[in-house]
Image 1 (cartoon, rainbow, N blue to C red):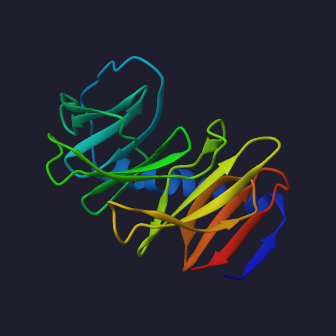
Image 2: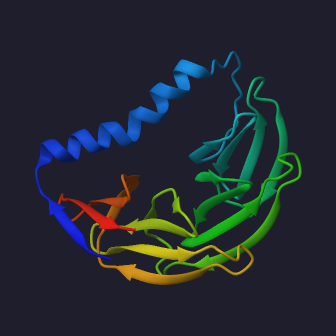
Length: 191
């Protein structure tokens, strides 16, 4: 992989806004939620399909119907971060967890891999490109970008570690884009 550093704050702010709000604006233009659900506990991430919403909370993932927000399932030990096909990927306690959501009302844990021995690191939601998931890990003193082969969901494997305090990870035009917490740089890696 090659990388190019873009240390300007203007580009950082622009990419943050694009990565953060572009999907939200699109979703607001196409989906209207007329429901509210109190979940409770520590909520960290959310992922959604056209029909279901997956909420990461203490101990597992709650699954809700998209239109009504009625809870239809809860899976202890799972993690939510992003949906790729019929799989839900998320990070909990330094571990990437892959869950089969073919039937969202009966999710099934497929596999997991420990990303780092330091389970106290902040983790980004996974980003998937092809058969690889990219997960950023960071704290004020350490961090990295982990590349995980997910071609066999039952046994995902870390295949590369890139030394960056990856506070944010996104995909843009054939590149994985990383927001480096330490250097305040936006770094793009070819994938």
